[in-house]
Length: 448
Figure 1 (cartoon, rainbow, N blue to C red):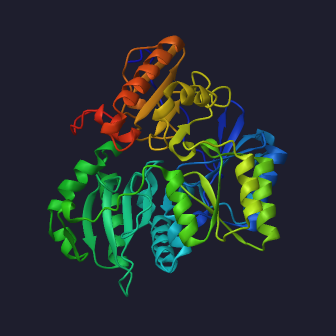
Figure 2: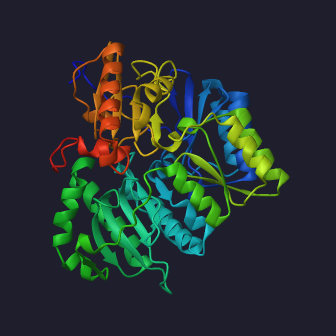
C-alpha cells in the first residue's frame, strides 16, 4: 500500500461550478440526453480555442470537459454557454443531473421513451429540495433491456427500457453494473421514477456513505409493503437476460455503425484538440447534420453514414490502436494538481511492453493518483503512478491497488512477464481479457 496519505481534493467540476487545476479552471458540460446541436458543439470548440488550452475531453459519463480556462474569463465563458442553453438553472441541479443514456436509444424508436424517463427524472431531481445532499457522483443510467450497450458502465440507479411494451415499462436496478446490480421489476415509467427518487431520498436521509448504498437497498427491498404501492416486485437476478457484448468496444462500435448507419469519431483517451473538434462540427455543417451524440465510451456519433473519404480522413487523424475505447488515463501532471506524474504518455510504452495482451479486450487504466477519475471502477490492468514509481493492479480500481512499489525497469519486467505468460498459454483463452480475469480472485470480498 502507498505510504502517502490519500485525501480526495476538489470536487467534480461543472459548467456552473468550475474547478481549478494545474492548467487553469476545468469546466464540465453535461449535454442533455448526451446530445449537442451543431451550434452548441461549435460554441464549445470556440471556447476551448479562445479561452482554454485548445483541448476538449469526453468523459466516461458522456460529459464534455474544457480545460485551462483563466479565472477572469469564467464569467464570459459562462455567458457563452448560457446563450446556447448549455447551463443548468442552478449548481444544485447541475450536481444532481448525472444521467447517462445509451446512445443507440437515440437512434431508434425507443428515443421517445428514453426522453420520457430522462425528463421525469430531471424534473424530480429539480423539485425535491431534500435531495440537496445528493453525493456529487451519484448517477443514473438509461439503457435498452434487450440490447444493452452500457452493461459494464456503473451507476447507482439503472433504468432499462422494454422495447416491445406499448406503454413505457422498465427494469429498475440499484448500485452496480448490469451484472452486479440489485434488480426490481417495475411495470410503468411513473412507478419506476417515483421508486428511484423514494429510494434515493430515503438513503440520503439515512446519513450513510455512498459505498453502503447497495447493502442499504437490499434491506429496503425486503420491506415488501414499500414496493406494492409502486407495483414492483423483487426478482431472481439469474432470470435477467444479459447480452454478451464484445469486450472489444472498437469492433462492437464498427458493427453498430454498420447496422444503425451512423459514423463515429474517436480519439485516444477521448481527447480532442480544438482543431479536431472543429473539423467534426464543419463536417456536420457540410452534410447538414444538426445533432452530435456524446457517448460514455468517449467517442462522438454523427447519426448518418458518411462517405468513405470523410471517414478515412477522421481515421487518419486519429493515431489509433485497437485499444482506444478500452484505455483510460487522466490528464496527469502538469494538468492536474493531484497527479503524481505523467500518465497518457505512458500508454505507448505499455502497449509495446504488453504486446499480445493489447488485443482490444483488456481495460487498461493509468491513474495519476488514487482517485481514479478517468475510470473509477475496476480494470483488468491498472497502473497507479506514484511520486517514486508505479504500482500494478489486476482487477482493481486505482483506489484498490495495494501492490509493492516498482521502478520503471521493474514495471517493464512485470509487464513482459505478464505478456510472455499469456503468449505461452494463449490457446487456452478466448481473449486477453479472459486471461487477465483468471489472474484475479473472484470472491465478493476482494477489495476494489
